Length: 513
Image (cartoon, rainbow, N blue to C red; front, side, top):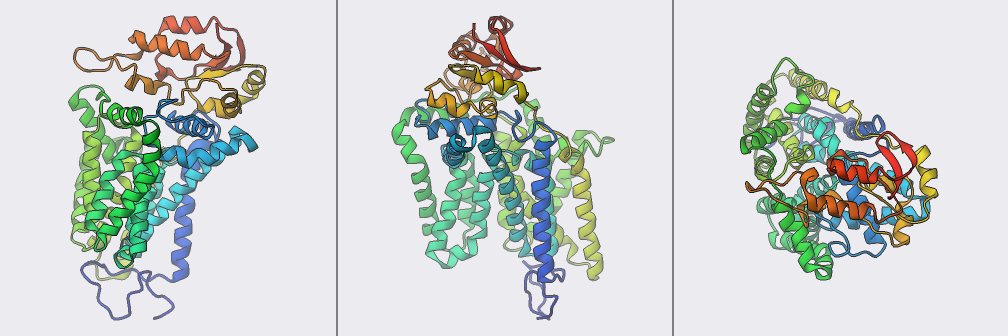
């Protein structure tokens, strides 16, 4: 083996097999350097979205604050699903629990900022694992897969804070990474199944990619399955025993019962465009309509999927990409971060497919240029969205002194504000009421449907207005910051009778009338 041994360690003189395109010769030090570089790019893109916008303590995307506040309530002895509404599996609360508990020592704001940075590092780790998975088919495949995952905006958007998908992605990627070890060792098979269980404990959807990975597991499927079941039992059953009916209602029935917004055709179009990346790419390809961008992307994607399907060992990534995309299309609701349910395996598929079609080029330097051109295109098409700010800055300089004057409890429709003001732990220790997921009640107790089955608009939902006002006025002061909370003009008028204690813009701390 020469000093320029290939990244896949193919002996000299060995012809590439059908499942292993000819790799570009890369020294080991170069492989390590590129892995570090891709991880750094992934982390920089993710943390940049926050720092340019609301900052590490900003009001970001609501869901991340819900999960953090739920973890804080759980860490302070409140029973999820029974003492407070929580529409997701318990895994995220268990994972964020130590951060929330740390808030009592280092302040809520610092603990939450640390949690957000940690999840951004998980996003960087996911990009590295994507590279390692694709490395089996050559350095070019690994580089394309890793960079695609690192810079694609939906991935960065999802992994910029404490959301479900970063850990769900990590669990399935680890299960894929351990596949070969799991085939030869019962212990590794159990561990691979447990990693998949971690993903399922974040979001029920991940049972689908877990089942696909199990189906493609070359051997020791029983042990792999036992690891999945054992991990699932350990993470789900304690909470299920504590609140069986409420947990089933909130995690399963409320999620399945979510109304599909808009018309069926309009909803499907939005999902298809989102899966194609058209909302991201349109900023760089403004002369093309989103529909034409989607058609072009899907045509290229089909070509790459065929290329990957021709490569033995890579077909699992094609199946994962197609099936998870269908799940998103069929789901009751859709948000931008749902796309990251597809992109981890799709990134590997793209890398392997591109390497497969570049393989017949006889000149190694030309193949290398082809890889570079693809990387430049990927980065150029994503940089506009990656460079945008996300979230709103909270005026903490005036809110924190005002909050310190409140002797009782503070309520809000965005729980991340409580953590940023350093009152989340304080209020929980005082026994204050806390709704981690305020608007989640409109999918549960306050789900009011029209005759056509569509959910009633929140401002017109009288049950919702009543319950919301009861909660917000249960404290001595309140902050209403989210437009999507859906306060009616009458409810706003009631709250605006309170005296302003501090804050500015949309973040005003008022006494409760």
